[in-house]
Image 1 (cartoon, rainbow, N blue to C red):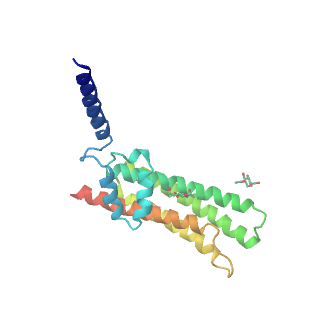
Image 2 (image 1 turned 60 degrees about the horizontal axis):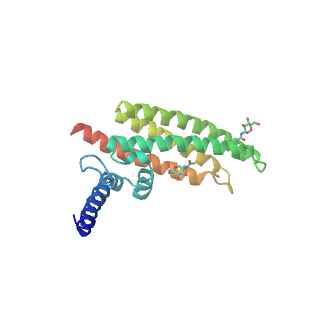
Image 3 (image 1 turned 135 degrees about the vertical axis):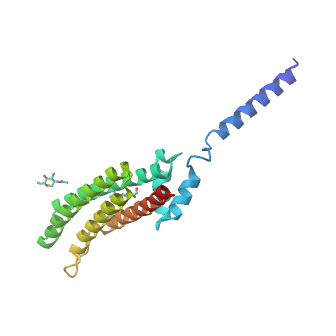
Length: 188
Ligand SMILES: *[C@@H]1O[C@H](CO)[C@@H](O)[C@H](O)[C@H]1NC(C)=O
Ligand SMILES: *[C@@H]1O[C@H](CO)[C@@H](O)[C@H](O)[C@H]1NC(C)=O
């Protein structure tokens, strides 16, 4: 072969390889991918939060709806135990008066329940018991709300964890929407 043909062959080969490489990251249309994430998240009340959770999880690539729900519920479990830890730390702070201290004690109790309920919802999801998932997640949301309300009982006070609670509430709402989709899928 003339040197020029060799160059051509190498060029063609590397172009092919480039094409193959650039095609591999595409997920097969049958199993999830970004389309499913977009579709799923747009049917939840918190599209942006939903997408940010799922797109930042390495496990979401190629996951089906059930797999996506598992990811979000896992995030909820981490969230709720982080919030519990934050309350613990707040209570150890120096600037805690007796009203705040009582509120935080009640909150620890509420969040201990919420932790258990999210654990129960993880188990329910494993069994595809979608109604139970809804029950436990709703119970956890209500416990988080109870904690928040405690601070409002005295004028001039506000929940020091309001921001975290709001995020947790959004994540729970996303799970509820996904669970709804899963139970519809089960019927069809
Ligand atoms: C809860 O999860 C969200 C989404 O991953 C994250 O932005 C937030 O920091 C978490 N909050 C806590 C208290 O872990
Ligand atoms: C808060 O104080 C209690 C009792 O002194 C201790 O057991 C706990 O580990 C502390 N928690 C944090 C988050 O510092």
